[in-house]
Image (cartoon, rainbow, N blue to C red; front, side, top):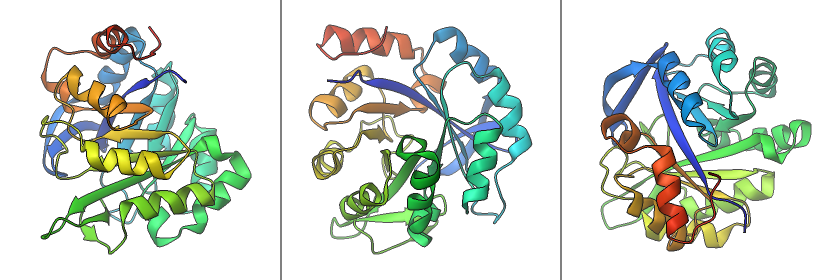
Length: 252
C-alpha cells in the first residue's frame, strides 16, 4: 500500500490567503508566502494552491504569482484556478508547478484532461470534483467555485476523468467545506471504489480522527485540509503521527 499523503490546501485571491465555509463567506487568513514558509519547515508531503476567483472572473492563472511562490516552495505543488487550455498548463509547469488541478474545465471541456495526460503524463493532472447535495439527497457536481450547478453525478464524473487520463481525483464536499465536521465518508468510498487512481478526500476535516475515517472507511489515498491547519493548533506532522499510530502508512 502506498503511503497516505497529508496535503494542506491554500486558497487565494490575488496574493491573499483566504478560507470560507461551503465556498462562501471568504475571509482573509494570512499571507500566502508566509504560509508556504511555515509548511516548508513542517515538511508536508505536498501543497495545493487554488485561485478561487480566476475561473469565476474569466481570467487565466496568475503565472507571475505562481512563479514567485513556486520559488519559495520546497515540496511538490499542484496549482489550479483559471486553467482553460494546454498552453495554460505548459506555462504553469514552466514556472514551477508539478501538477495542475482542473475543475470547471474538466466539465466544460473534458478533452483538456486527455490533452494534458497525453502531453505531460497522467501524473500531472488532478481532476477536482466539487459537489453538493440537492433536495432529496442527490449529489451533483458544481463548477465555477460552487456557483454553477450541473446534472453530473460525482461518481460518473470520476470514472470519466480516469478514462480520459486523470492521475488523481480531488473530491470536495461543498456542504462540509470549512465546517470541520468531518469528510463525506460515504461519497469518498463510492468514488474510491469506482476508480483505480488515488482519491484525495477534501472538505470537512476538523480533527485527526476525521482523517483516519477518510482513509479507513472512505478509501482515500490522500487527505487535503485547510481550516484545521488555519484555525486550530493541529499540524500536518501531528496528523501523520496520529495516523501512523492507527496503523496507516505515512511519510514521517
